[in-house]
Length: 382
Ligand SMILES: [Mn+2]
Image (cartoon, rainbow, N blue to C red; front, side, top):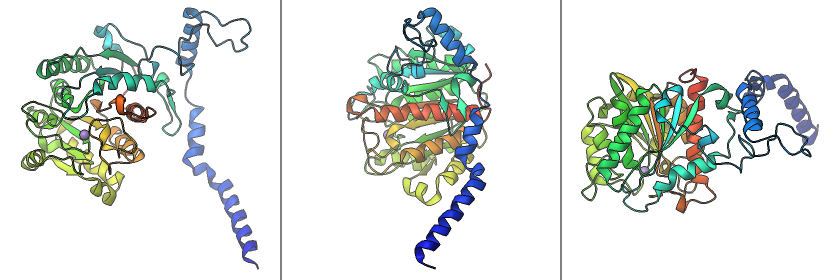
């Protein structure tokens, strides 16, 4: 039998196998799972749009289209909140929501390029590209989660006073039983954010930190800059350094002052080399074990510069050799399965971004975390 004949037989056999076993494919299972999701809130959004935005012109055949855009469509229209979720002007009502987006337009803690004060705006704007449904995760956030956008914290040109504003804002959201999702801003905000979360936890809190930088020296140029959040966060009584996991650290931008503190305090540090050797599943398992040990809650800090700078040019201290986007997304999904008290995405600087890819990945991280927590029953139900 000629080689090509044999090849043809194998191909036919493979085709038969695929037909028999394709039900095992994630892709096929996800397609079936979609049928079980409700569309109640999507229908309500269309009804509301027709009421508030008037019915479409007579020539438009699709009668779900309103005259003024008042919902998800078109994706290029509208005044952008995060994922076009409701803007909650009255922050006293935040307890009605499962999770709340809050922007922290703050970048005076930067030590090289500034510009992350425009991070929240950029992330919100490009988040309009996304639907509320994710095929692989089988979740429709609009239907399964009550999410609002609180707008931004009023930060000023003073690091310490801004920290107090940030802590007060985050603590308020936490105190109402709502998960804060913080859009930075530079990484100095990690400290006041954790402070606001920790004071609402009856017990210890662990921190999972994705970064190329160690960010744990006491001061930088005499101030508490974005190189310092974990020094101060792990001074908080119920945020102990033994529960801080730092993943993706490495390269030529890790100051020795920070390395010394990490060593002295005994934080758990994993390089990209560790990630490559162990694999994402094992890294997530170890991170969860360390962060949750003796703790009641875990905080996730995602520095966008933990990703290889080829994917995220829009950041203050770009560094090659970090995570691939899908590695970081997978890692965050795996840690979100166990539940998170709060999450921050920091260091998006849109002035240096190209085609919004940096801001897009920041939005994507938030969505993946929320969807994973929803799928695993760790959030939702309000
Ligand atoms: Mn960093």
